[in-house]
Length: 120
Image (cartoon, rainbow, N blue to C red):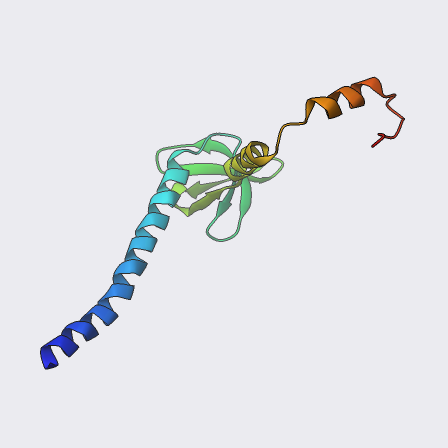
C-alpha cells in the first residue's frame, strides 16, 4: 500500500512539471522559428516591448528602426513576435472562413447605380 501511495505521489508531482517543460520547449521552438524567418521590412516586437521595423539582418543581430531614421542594433534573440507575419496569417484565415459572395448578390450589385441602396 505504501509503495502504491509513493508512486501516486511521484506521478502527481512529476506530471505537471513534465507538461510545463513540454509547453516551454514548444514556445521556445516557435520563437526560434520567428527569429530565423525574419525579413527586412517586418514589423517585430522585442521581449522588452519595443515595436520596430527590421532594416538589416546579420547572423546574430538585427537593425531595428523605431522611428524614421532612428536605427539601433539589437541581438536577434530579443525578437519574440513577427507582427507582420501574424497580421498576414490572420487576414488569410479570415478570407478562408468567409463564404464567397453568392452569384445573385454579385449580379444585383453590378446592375445598381453606385449611389443607389441595395434592394432586398
